Length: 281
Image (tube, rainbow, N blue to C red; front, side):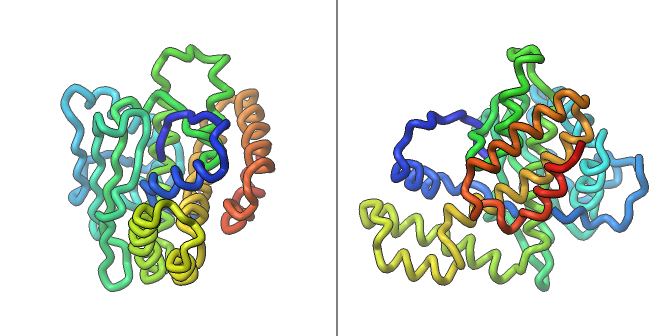
């Protein structure tokens, strides 16, 4: 997930090239692997033996606030218990200056053991509580931009940060539920695609690229968008429990508008989940 609000005036070809070259995270609800955690169950770092939180001291206070707001929801607690506190899973969470207002999954750190995802790394920007990504791939987090008029726009917002954290956990959760062979193949071939795309002068009509796309089951930009849309359903489920009714309705209105204006190919795999969430009142 990146968080610069880009101009909508870019031509389609430029958007394609930019999206391919910025393949950063690979997401793709369901919900956490914790077996029926009880509502309100304790969910913190104590007792999470395999969790590593690499947070610079100067950012520890804000990270603890973000985490507390994340854990104040049922979906946040489920995801935390299912990955941060699963004794068979190794999760690393890093707060980094380099990510700024965004977050991502370090997909090279995904590890599988006998077909089961057993390790992942989430990187969070040190200003995660500011900034909104472009709605074209982030119909939920991007729509929060239009709710800021009722808030102090210059103030760090812990709910925004927590929603971004839910989004990143959604990537991990979806990866854990994907077919590992296909998922890893798509990740590996995406890198091959990008390398070839650069070397051929950004020619999307290259037959070699068409062969890669056939093996992947779709263009990298499409597969990435579909995974982002899956992760966004987690963020929406979280926000529907955290926002007051008025802002919840406003958010849903903008989310529906974003979905209506985006390619249906992006959200078809997660369409049932979107229909369920968008009907929430």
